[in-house]
Image 1 (cartoon, one colour):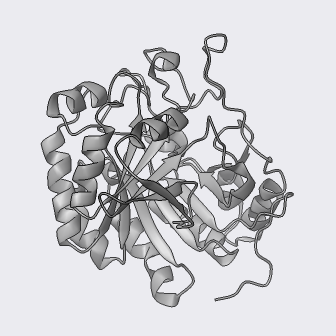
Image 2: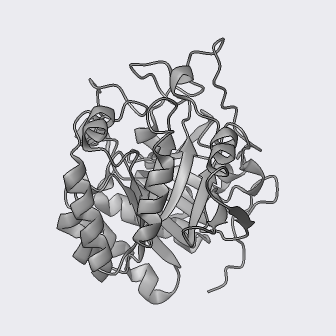
Length: 335
């Protein structure tokens, strides 16, 4: 399906990828993502599932070809599968190329079969360690066994799984080779991510930050890594790993930002549109959405927002800058 006027930002980038945070709530409290005692949004502030469907549909009509549901943890949103099933009609019509989600895996065993039935062919599972005790420590509330069961269920349902691991100095940096072998042994790609300075947490991110340039150099002592042009629509740069036959991705917002090819915007569960993960500028889509039964007002608001999309982010992590670069937590915009 071709669109006469695809959304284009001031720097000539076509916006074809929408990430939708369907809830800011999560059943984990990962130490690099949020504080343990979080205050979440009251239910009255959230868009209904029907409003989220309507907004997503407007974006699809304006040229979005890939839609990713995120959170918080998207599968803890009540009746979330109703939204997934409604959105799947755009896969059937050909208007949408891919409907996918990022999850912590805790609820996958419950929903994997239904996700597959709705046309979800690929998911990202956030997993930072294969050690059950360390997993519980970093998630505070999570249990590795439930996530492993979820991964099993997703693969059994025919959904391709990719693992996302945040590389954390002194926590899992020495474990990455083991995770790589384990993932590739199950035909699962692994992507490493640098921690990002978003929202106040209970620790100091400078103690956690692991530049992936150093991690790659360390991995190349044991593995042969070859750069490849493979893309999934997101910001990861991929390599082939000769010894395992699998792919390894690097998402490097700190050491090598990927802004020049950014094709995405992020919608929150309150109807706020963030044009950049690393900037505070945002647009309210809830008001124009609710102001009219038609979609002209919200479509115009989207156009105005895309016209303000910045060239790049301003993420910084160092000892002199111990405040987050943006005040909102990752769970608000879903990464």
